[in-house]
Length: 450
Image 1 (cartoon, helix red, strand yellow):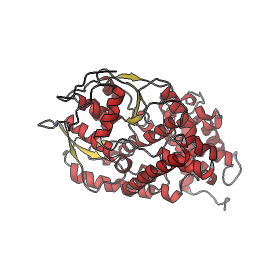
Image 2 (image 1 turned 45 degrees about the horizontal axis):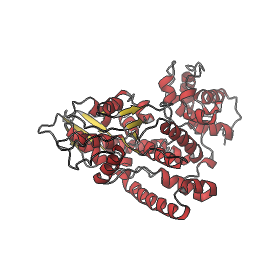
Image 3 (image 1 turned 135 degrees about the vertical axis):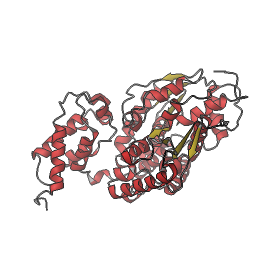
């Protein structure tokens, strides 16, 4: 079986990878931004190490047949965060490491955190809503059975208990009701209560855009998505929400289902073209960072350019935020920072909030270890990366942590809660900006008490 000659397509792919590999000068600048190298200190868990292994595979210096398990482990644990590509002076593309992962395969022993059949269906909002409900129940049962430190106790027990605790703890969540969110943030601000009201909309919207919710936010964080839409409308957007839009296809693509990803792409392009054709929409606004990268990848077929919601807000003349006297640490999702180059925009928005102090954690370039389904396939390494990121965020002394991607939100919240000392809460960046907008409305200026 292993002695069968390679197909012409496979030979072309190997030649393409070999040509890309020659760009790497092995300078090592990628190591300090690679989360798996930071967590393990293992050269084979770095971009440079993985590319050396890929070179061995292409040159035939490894044994015939499937790669050695250690090679598969090194290549298969690349998160795909693109941090290495962002700092590479030779312009080595992320596609090269993706090719290395494909060639190296993935050891079956790694696929233990969740059934593969479930991972392949995570692009369905209804299923995600069910998972969110089960996670809520699971956290309650674990707290009843193991106490307030249930994460640590489950880890000590190990086995199924540790896996269940990891899954239940890392599912993204945020305050459901507006009143609950305002109450929590008012408590952190320690000032007068913020009057709860709907954000006003301008009489004449400044721009018509297509809103793309994405399956993760729609399924797991629907109320945060609703608040972000209200924030965009407050800022002057007229949101078109065409019926029939599906998942962006990122989860299917990462899960080895390119055919399904293509079907989802074509379905989205069809409904967007019907709604936004002939210049009817100025942009397609995405919420989750991973969705943004996937939608941008549709290329010239898009009826309007893809724009992240945070970027759209940052480039728009806003009515004005109210004071939020908090120290806030920002975590950049990899698919925002590296995949779309979104760095300045969230910082500009936070600095526009009166009395808010923006804090920058160390290793801001490094992934938190979520990586979508990657964290479910590699739970141990994912937990280590989450703990490292949580410690760095807590070390800033922030009152609050914010991020703009659902996977990062769940990963960081779980890791912060597992630390054996008091840590700040984490919420979606859009929720904090919505709160600041609410405090900037007439009657929404409480006396600062922080």
